[in-house]
Structures are given as structure tokens and as C-alpha cells.
Length: 241
Image (cartoon, rainbow, N blue to C red; front, side, top):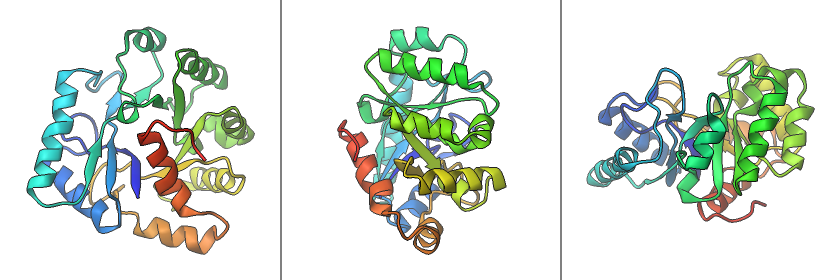
């Protein structure tokens, strides 16, 4: 499996606070069958580090991979960022400030939970106008999508990639997120499921419970497509299935 969305880089956001926590997260992910983790720190936020493309961020990926290798953990770290659509979003797009997923055309984008559908659409089009493919992080958590799931379904039909969270499906992020994630999954709008992990004790990168849940509640869904094939295609900058 490939985990497309994970806050495993230490000290860069509200995820792993130390290298030791990052290593625990990597080991936990590997134990559940994850072979590659896209390290996607929050980017373009108000209060945290901006985490724009640059030597400091690239060095953080390298240092984490070296630490993982030195501890014999069979996980590869891939680059990326979870970009908050706010402020001078389009200017930063033009400047190339945002790290895409493994250097591909795919850009992981998130919004404030109470963002308006009009602004969301404006930002999605801005990404596409620059030759990139938007990957919408956890659409099931946005209030407008919870109120009108057909909005996210329309995004999917227009070629935007929908990534839902493991924790949403498992009910860890509230009943509305669980209901919306399940609905989008059953309607075939979801392209990827990821951990959005922040620690090894809570919101973890372990995929065991998710696989059991999918087998029990969604037998019509192929986990390999959502957890391996599509993330791998993103890593390789290929079109999704």
C-alpha cells in the first residue's frame, strides 16, 4: 500500500513532533503493509511554517528517509504537501511554491472546513489552469460537501481526485464525516483512501482496521485500487483508473 497523505515529517506542522515519533509512525505503517508514505506537511497555513518548496523542505524528506533506513524500516518517503487554499493561493501557484505529490502534476489541496463552494471551485480551476491535477484532501470533512455530497461527486466527474480519510470511514472524525465518506465511496467518487496520520497513538498510519472495515462494510470496493493502484499512478504521474 501507498499512503498518499501523512504528517510524518518531524517538527514541521501539527503532526510528528520529533524524529522519534516519525520513526514510530513509519514502523506502524510498515507493520500494516504500507511500503511508501507521501510526507505531506501542512502548507500555506496562517500559523504554522509555510513549508513552501525549497532546500529546507527537501532536506527534511532526505533526513527522515536516512533515519528510516538506518532503523531498518521498509518504508520509502515520497515528497508532497497538503496545501491550504487561502490568501495569495494563485500567486503561489504561479511562483511554483507548492510541492506536488512526488514531483508529479498532482497537487494535494485542502480548504477550511467552512469554505464556500464557489471559492473551492475557483481554486480547483486555478490548479487546472496551470496544468496540474487537484487532489482534494478529505472532502467528506467540508461542511458544504456534508450538506450536499453531490458537490464532491461532481468534482470527481470533472477529473478532480477525491482522497478520503481512513479516520472518517472508521467514525473517528465525527458521524457526518463518516456518513459522507461512506456515501462518496459507495457512489464510486473516491479515488484514494489515506491515513492523514499525525501520530502513532492517535490518527495513526496503521491500515489494519481500515482493511477490515472495507471488507466488512464495502465488499463491492477494491481496496487495492484505492490504497495501492491509484496512489502508485499518482507517484508515477500517470492517469488514474
